Image (tube, one colour):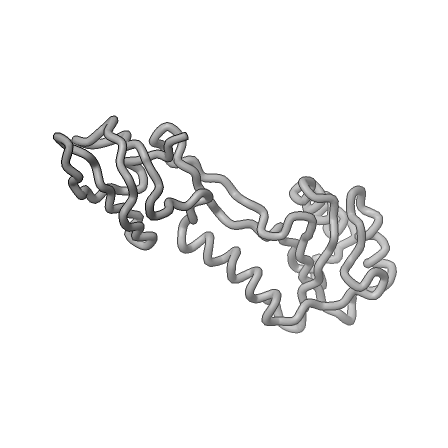
Amino acid sequence: MSEGTKWYSLRVISGKERKIKERIDAEILRNEWTTFIPSVVVPTEKVYKIRNGKKVISERNILPGYLLVEAIPAKLSAEVVQVIANVPNVIHFLGKNTPEPMKDAEANRLLGKVDESQAAGESLIEPFIVGETIKIVDGPFSEFIGDIQEVNEEKKKLKVIVKIFGRGTEVELGFMQVEKTG
């Protein structure tokens, strides 16, 4: 967060956040407002799914239908607010014509979540659940079906009970070695 700036919540049409951000960025550059509007952010986090034994990473919007605008409150004039509000698919600032800044803790939590997801890697979009039946797709037990006994999110490992010769045997597998059945 730059010195003296506050974050503002901007309601937009859901699903068009990136395009709207580009338009607002262009408007800021065209009007030379970069000195008091340092950034516009689409709050996203990285998530992944496992498809055919491969990790597929995508970004998921944390706040669908919202952009975060960083600005110096004293410089956020009615004219500036009006120009941004008139960008296609923008609904309005929170607080309509007199935008209300977000609480610092609120903004930091949302932005922290964005930063954390960049640093921490990704989180699984469909987490594994104890008791769930999975199919092993990699390693010596490939093609076996098993039931999850334990999930270790940090190490990205599962303890799975696999029936071998009619007896349940516990095996430890990485998230990438299994896929959900059904």
